[in-house]
Length: 444
Image (cartoon, rainbow, N blue to C red; front, top):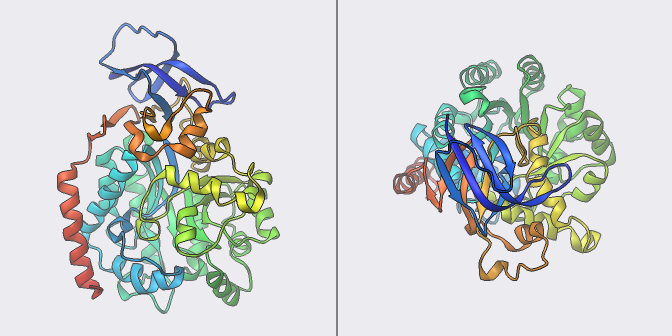
């Protein structure tokens, strides 16, 4: 048994009462077994002095593309469909095993450094096994899956799949990785979006999701041009079509959902569908601003994600929280999307989306030890006197304030030093990989 005692911290629990206390956290193996003042367990392997530090639940990002991290800076200033066709799809088609692995490691390193402990990740068509290998080695908690694309005239040949092969490869990956490391890694079927998937594939995904009781992770209603294509092909809007196919249920995570009509909002609410709001990506791709306050008023499950590095340029939850709050205020008034609301979306809201609200998303006895320790003792976070701690985190803190990150009871970063990823290897390999891919895709 491995034990960790974290001493004398301000603890933002995110429990039902929203308690913020000063005290200790005791971790045994992967679980929090005690929270309170002056804990004195009989045996402790490691003590972390967290005096004048703030402990928060690890962030849960519900829409990430690890395979795209090495495309950072390669898709700037384009709208969605041009971004996909001119840059992202050609680069994804050029991926090899090493580039997928180092792209994933690069992204996970950034996520850990900014306090994210759980992700919902969508990979590309090929080499997804190597992304799972990176996730396994890094210690990140993840739901991930190969992207599924069996339709589309302008899709590069290397990304064009046969329906049966896409389904079989997905099932093979699921059976290998789902439940790995006592459930730290889970599989999620990942059809890219309606435009790139046949009805046959989507219906089979629905059946397989039910059979294996795993999540489905896809994009919907991100861009007006995308919606026009879906309506022309199906006669229905995105969410209505997914509901028609039986996919709209509590296992479905929809990224973006910017352009929803009232019927689609009703379906999302009634079926228990989860929405991943990605404000940074939505702004950079000029896609629009999601009606997040309206969705929350309807008690729709909404969480946060950074999306991918080439449509956001960073994977920082502090940035997403701040944007999620600020972009709504000119429309809905200064009290809309307050700090508590967006912090909840980033923690327990994300846990709800991945079906793990009893395991992660808050700091409580019996839950998994997924947390971040912040050092908020700096110019940009002071004064601290009589300031709400969650306000300080959402509106003032940055990823540079994350000092230590623990996932599943394992210290993956301590005092800003990575423990599971070798930065000196990953950075140069990421550079070598993107050089190779740009040449292969003829995009230099």
